Image: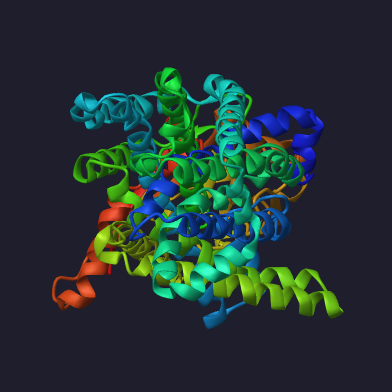
Length: 631
């Protein structure tokens, strides 16, 4: 396997133009559909849409896009890569590298909080995007309003149903469709700007400053709505490994940013000329004959945006599993060529249920605006905090000081945006907060529970080296073949090995003790895949390592070891796997405040996917040894 960073890999496989168009379809679907609801949501917080207010609103919007997206994410955060990979968990592992104790746990908590809030974004995006697109039929005729929610439900069910088919075929269509979408946004905006060119005065930051000076509280509230224009900014960073920073930057500055600015300023120009268009300024951009085509195109664009965050949640879940923060789950690959195209059935079903509940419960896209902003700004805040640990270490001298000063400014702005959305906690913000709290509790429970379980297994166990030495002095009956004993702890006698000796009283001709670990890097090459130590005449210890964006494949590993160590007989037909299957017993005499998390951990353990499937081990070659552990 190549050890090249992801950006170099994709650059060698695809031309620059193909990567740029591909980034339009995957990376920019979320932020590209923000014009559907951002200006309308902002207008709901303004007492009246006077011309100076419209200019102030557009000026704030323009400089937020430039400061947060163009400067923070496209310019700075794309530099904080973990061997070419981005995203909250990749940044967390990068920031935690070299730390221990409390300092490491602080970084882990920040990273997990950002990841959990991302899940809130992932379920709100399909709901608010599809609703806002379908609401266009209400602009065509108010008699169609009762059909908005039923149509949105049908589209969302269809969207989650096709996830199991994979995104390979659809993915090739996403880029061109989104390119058409951005071209239409730009054309409609430019047409309206030509009719009211005075809206371009909003490029002057003095309009934003004047608006904030004369109405500071209204401006503060308004930021909570305008932040909807920044939704999807995290995706730029998270998808860096798929397309590379160059393609993402080209797509942003060459296509997305100009189109979005033209569309937003076009809506402002429309409001200056026709204040009554405030009911839905986006769809009023189009002439009457273009409403239905625009509704259809907007619906397609929102489905693409929803697809991007759904697959993103699959990737984040896989990373959490590899890093030990989530139980093993069934992961299906939907493409023979692309490793990143995966499908997690349980995650898909859970997301579908939550999204449908949001659509039915909210009824309108505007009712979800508060919930959306809370999730987005919370994730952005966690990213800025982690960036303080990573970015300054990559600079020195004056440049480092300037970077720190810039990060302080960006962090202050993130705090301001998040504070504005905290006011919406009871107006929808509680939804992602509740979801993130539940997921965070589950992740920490699983991590700490596994650690406690490992400590229990290691307690009182003899050293593996010492045990093998004593065993070779008085060997039991030897049988033909090779036995692979899976162990979660290095240099500790696996429980399955002890049970096999105790009950079967035999030892195989060759024995391999295998421990699978996860790296804090996204990818580990074949050359660095494992370390092997010979413990005795016929016993070996292997410690294998996979990156947090890779999936363990034990048979493939053994094939590699057999080629490089011919003295080991790892013929698949003569190799058996021995695993321990723990059953967690919760001590009932404990008080409830100590028992509930242990009960939760036991429930998660029972519902985790079988290790044979997770490690790609053939089921007909496995012997499982059951054991009970009290917690």
